[in-house]
Image 1: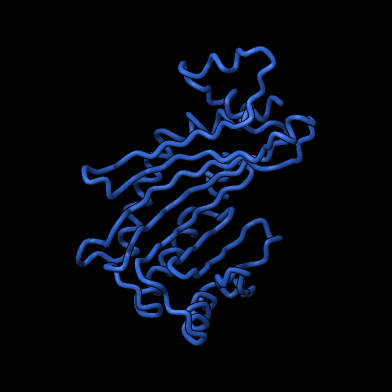
Image 2: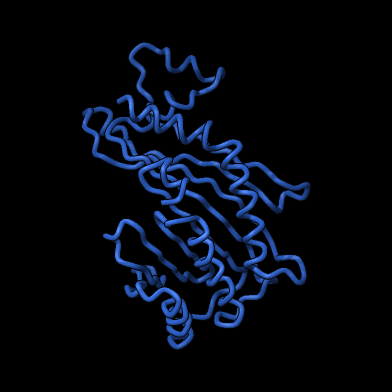
Length: 247
């Protein structure tokens, strides 16, 4: 398991390529694309169509680690849950990006956005929002709300997006997603569910001339991992894990 995997119950690395134009949806084109991916990863043998029309190829879900690739009308997605290493996940994403120009006719000019995302799930039975507020703090402007007599936190999902260049074409976003609702808090009945932390570095717009998708993704990966190691692990992930461990 990769070092990042030790920080949470589940860890995943995803790539999303959003296009300005619709992707081809012909039967032969779709099957040829997924067959090429399967040739590289033979254990990806589960192919299906979602109710909304998206196409998915994935590994079995009961192995602890899972690869998947999906095609939507204007988005190509690739993900690896609990990879043995970040490099193993990146190799999968790189393959997908190498295939899309000639198998799906996607040009770097057609790029609406390219994402590199690292996600972490923490399993917790209890009030997710209250735990996040306790672990990360709410900040001076909102601390007073927690002192209201009888108050219970019902929604607290910190999120911040920052630009990484002057023209705001490269952005980083940290988002925390909780899954507790008011009904559960009122009845004090909490199912075991995941608190998710997502850290995404995104490139907006067409790629620079002569730049390949996989080359740009490598740059996004470097930025993502540098910021993860500097700003996210000790400030967000470890405090959440420690707060859960004390409950």
